[in-house]
Length: 105
Image (cartoon, rainbow, N blue to C red; front, side, top):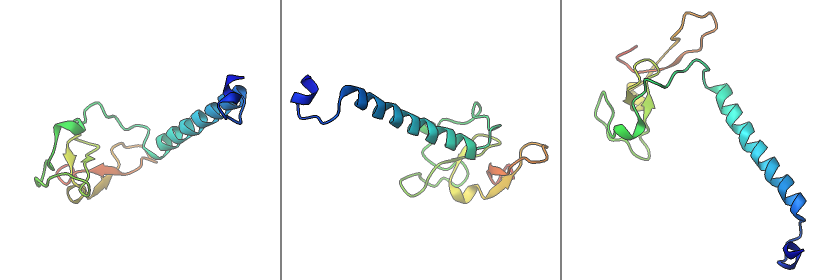
């Protein structure tokens, strides 16, 4: 009743239902992101993003337009120009090519 006095047009039960639907949408987006990324991608050996401010290969400073990319093989961080390579890291028949640095290529 207090909810209606504050000018709200929805009842609390309807509000809860909307919040649950929003949570489902967010969950769905996360699930979708997992589908497009390789399932066998292990990030345990990756260098943390915060540890690097320059490309490990060429020394270019990272910023708003120069993004950090992890080599899926060695785990170091590089700019886009130093990660041209795309190879499958497993011998599986349907293994998808993933980003690797020029050194690992």
